[in-house]
Length: 266
Length: 101
Image (cartoon, rainbow over all chains, first blue to last red; front, top):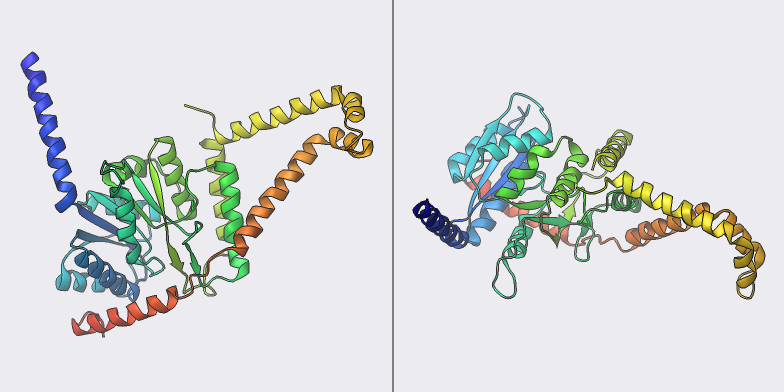
């Protein structure tokens, strides 16, 4: 049994070294994009992503999870794959919800690090290198141990383009309320632009039961309970749809429901 | 593994109630000893309605956070223009590859 211990020790040591080497050159980034009716935006966000990752010499794959879009989203995804590669397509039989879209995407992903973001151009890929740097860099060269980097609109340097004061009031009010009730360790609890270590998201995604805004909140609450280390990067969110959008009483009620659920169960 | 959030609130609420009872029991003493800088009327009201005072002060603080947050909310001027520029570039390249028309 002593020999076994030594062999296991060496094996673990080799894995550790191999893992660290992979950090620098072979790290694969998976960007999971749930799509519904994104025929116009999908090629644009893909182009911007591939341009950024190529410029930074990073390995990447874009995992498109399409919930049977009634437009040409799937076809566009196929032609992107043919032209550029770096695409994995998960086609689902119907609108099955954001949480399960992320789960399906995660299952199909091969990445060591996972990026979740909006596919409608409200999130700009230019923030991804900053997020990666936050995950990688410590001043003294040691590993940061950061599991999640969360893009925030509410810290200095972050914000939203395209909101009037009423929308800002709603957003900030919701944010302060969530802060008070849940005391999370992030400033932007409903933000959906985040970079995850693979093992981090593998662990917490199955724990999340809700959808919509509540989904993003629940993820961070579970991360906090799992004692995960979270860093924040200010980002700008560009809302081109404000006015035609989708923040009615129904969304507010759903948000409050999700908030209260987390208040009483976590 | 720790208190649930609502339990934390219940704990704080209990502490406030406990403090209230303590204040009430020492009400006359407190009123006379602070009469030099707090008017006895105000002091009496503050003690008798202590939990309400706590809630109101807390509410004012939260309201301040919201209003201050809205006033300092960054509009990211330039982000939209930059995005539109990048979208133009993307469309041009994608048209070349025949992915969009």
